[in-house]
Amino acid sequence: MSTTGKPSGSRRVLRGRARSLAVASLAGGLAVALAACSGGPASTNAVGDGKGGTSIEATLAFTLSSGFDPSNASSAVATAVNQHVFEGLVDLDPITREPYNALAKSDPTPGADGRTYTVTLRDGAKFSDGTAVTAEDVAWSFTRVLKPADPKAPPLMQGFVSFLDSVTAKDATTVEFTLKYPFALFSERIAVIKIVPKAKTGDAAAAKAFDTAPIGSGPFKVDSASKESGVKLSKNANYNGPRAAKVETMTWNTTTEASARVSDLQGGRVQAIEAVPYLNVDSLKDKYTIDVKQAFNQVFLMFNNSAAPFSDKRVRQALHYAIDKEAVIKTALNGYGSPATSYLDEGNKAYQKAATVYDYNPDKAKALLQEAGVTNLSFRLDTTDSSVVKDVAPLVIEQWKKIGVTATLNTVPSSAIYGDIVPKDTFRVLMATGDPSVFGVDTDLLMRWYYFGETWPGQRYRWSDADRKAMSDLLDKAAQTSDEAARKVLWKQALDMAADQVPLYPILHTKVVTAYDPAKVDGFSGASTTGLYFLGTGRTG
Image (cartoon, rainbow, N blue to C red; front, side, top):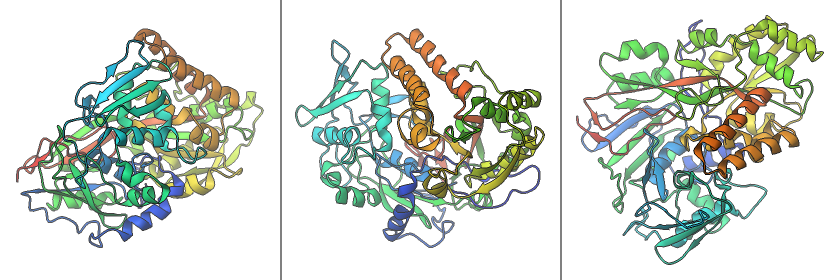
């Protein structure tokens, strides 16, 4: 996901949100493949006629930067599309984040020991190509994530389902899950695995083709998609689930330019836009509905924890204490954000304030650097080209100067950050954004994204083996704890460890602003994460 454009003055316009979740090795090649399969128009702002009736038109804040295979899809656009195209056995409502049975006919049935679950498929469920969804497809969808063909390159979703041992088809419509240990969040967690047809994903060649031409059992199907021309979807005539499409087609513009999104809405070409520029809220609110929601979406600092002086946590802590977050939020976000007081945002129902909170304290920052024996600290600050990061980073660099720290700015697209810069030994400090809450909002899931497994702690911020094990043990112990109060205590320990160690840790959590025309769409609400979601939305004008 990338954004373009320059900040406009000291009170900068936020031109988009970004989630730095993309897998760099996928982004380049897949964008080319997606463009090749697209029959869309040349300009992302030329799609859709805005005339209403049986279609919805919308403008998203990002361009397509990954494929659609739900085992690995990571870009903001792809994950939003997948919510309309694929189903899990259980899905999370993208707005309320509450679980509901999707492909599952009824709630998963637990075994007596809590280590097995049985799920029966919805009667008559079909993929968009007309083939039946079978228990074998379900078992395969989980198995390809749990036991990939290349164990050295596990799918992104694997860390979220590490509690599973095996998934098997008992008959054509019944699936049995065997767990490594009882897991209290089973029903909502299996929502991260979307069901795909085994016949279309059974080998590497088939999976590669599927990535650009997805087939799911959800209410919509993808007709065309590319980075340049956005996404076109149409109603899946074979869908018989609980979230039936209320329009025949959808056309999603994709642009990182804030002014283009606002123009699309005001010109009547679309009915909804995401990532409303904060300075445009007042001018839009008289005619359009503005949804403002606290988000997990965070601007974070990530360090190479194996490289001096950032291998010393006091140096990492000093750089956090030196940031006047309230001033940054006021200037860069026009107030639409919250200083991080925990890894979780304060809007999360499981929020717990961390034992260490990095209130603005330049004197303490200087003292920590002195304790660490660090003077005249100078380094390159790498950043993604997310518009919010581009607005925040220069302010942070100026504040670091007040404690005698010099940072030079290097801004490049996410694909280059995670594909080229971070893997090198020369990498030191990154500022980027991230929002795994698109997959779920429970503490276990959100913490496992950044603090569990190989991708982030091992390959990116290079956390020590001891710290990685300590965090993994806490998360695993909490996951195996059936008592909710005891689990909350363990999660608090994990949150406190992340706050104390700050190997990767938020500076702030943003607020998400969505705008839509209430005279033209019915049943729509903005989400507290990236993307626009039209499940159950119809056109009224």
